[in-house]
Figure 1 (cartoon, one colour):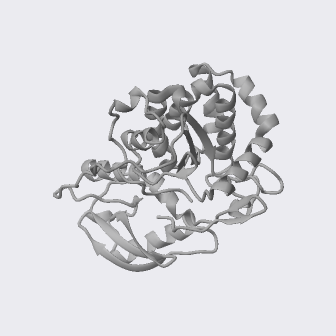
Figure 2 (cartoon, rainbow, N blue to C red; figure 1 turned 180 degrees about the vertical axis):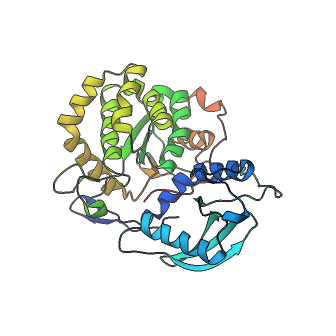
Figure 3 (cartoon, rainbow, N blue to C red; figure 1 turned 90 degrees about the horizontal axis):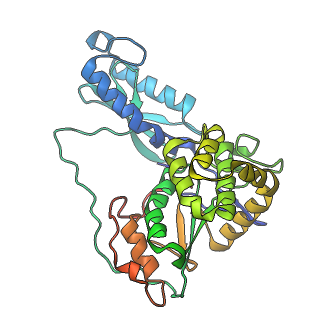
Length: 340
């Protein structure tokens, strides 16, 4: 739901200021599942029974929705406004406007749950299918270099990693697969909530724990490259931007990484590593997560393993035999959605 923003590049810095509206996506699935259970079983997280006696009027539901959004979800200094409300039976659909866009939000009739997506179970949802297409043309080399820029807890960045990981496994050392990270300066006004340094040069969109994890993953790639994907896959599955500073170490140990060495790298090399990320991101024009470059040409295809494999294999001067293998087409068939 975040609007596209242009990066301001100044003296090796990348600054992107965004509303927090896109954070709603991260919680909507959990809330939607909880709502379904509540509607079926008649309970809510407050312990109050759901039923006609506890229902809000349309006006009350609309006001509660907008008040909650403006108190908890939008960037300071901005606000959403009420546009209309529709009674859908068990829930209300509240249409709000935020920074020029109309956005539907759903609220349970007792006012307990707020969520972003609703599916009508009487309708069939069309499944996204990957349309076969010719691989993107990129410069050919004997050993292609893939540079992928993500934020460690951007869901779209993790989606790209889910697509690239199987290609890395398939091609092994016949391809260079470099992780890189989107670093902002002065994000959110700066400060220790987002930034590593007092000058606010090195900050991350989802907070300081995400930035710490970006550094750790750079350290893992530098000192335990062969274990990078094992580590990242488990981090993505078990940790979040709220707990990764305490979650990561057990995972590192589990996959065979010397956690003490990563801590040393994090404490002594963080600034140097992040400076290099900013410089490379500026050079390539990186504006958000994910952005993937194959032989320094930006990739514009789908985010399935097979999509990535086809274009990466097209970057070989002579394709290795592994390129004849077909990988999964599960995932996003189009490069849509991003953080930044």
